[in-house]
Amino acid sequence: MKWEKKKKRKEKKWAGPIIEELLAFSTVVLHCIESTTARLAQLSQMLNRHWERILCRALYQTTLQSIEEENV
Image (cartoon, rainbow, N blue to C red; front, side, top):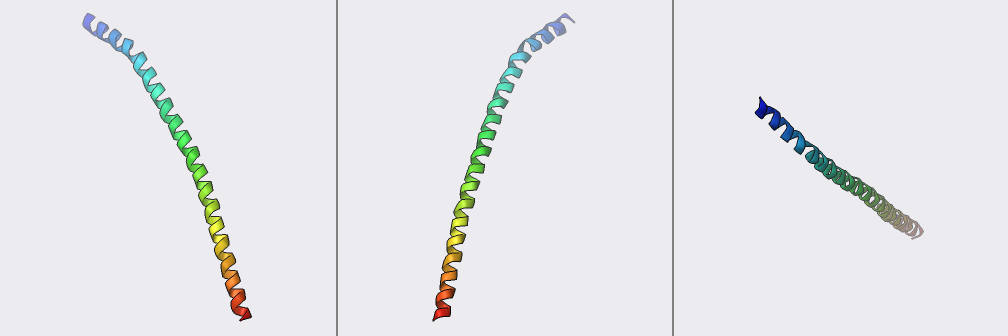
């Protein structure tokens, strides 16, 4: 019985620092996820703008070609 009480006290002594470490680690992981998500959103916007430009150029060139073909 005494041994069980001592063991529980020892476990409680270690539980606090372990929980604090886990909390700190999870906070760091959460921050990394948030910054990665923000960066992915930025990259997505950049890609969308890039593809918009490509599609606009293609549409413009196709329109010019069709006008030239009609004039010939």
